[in-house]
Image (cartoon, rainbow, N blue to C red; front, top):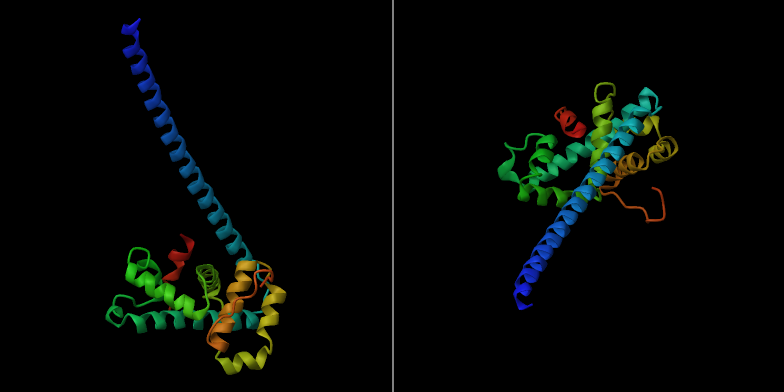
Length: 204
């Protein structure tokens, strides 16, 4: 009888090893599924944003005024990054270069996040603003502040009334706040609230 115990122990060890391998495989598949689900969700949101941007029904004047705010914000962000990284001025000639290099450069990423926080902006706002800029960069004109105020007295009302996509609406409203007040103010949770290189970046 005793001679059978080693065989039983061996079989138990094999089963235990198999269970551990299955458990590891399950965890791995779960992680891959979660990553894939997140990627699909991000892609869906990105597609929805592009659809919303291209469906805007502004007049050419209104579009140019919003474009002017967006352009000023993007230039402002780029300028603030360079002020914090004076030794990298030559290596970061555009905002697109900042967005590209921050992915792998921790120092640039830290400064970028700091600039966003100081401005009251979030990454989602930048995605929305870059998408808008790319979509209308060849159609809109730039107007200085005095001209903008002459044609549209309440740009905030224009945005909230015409822009239905929440991410785009939030991004445009915050862009206006940054330019007019120096910083965007986030709404409470229960309330709705030369850059050509950006083209390949925003579409990826």
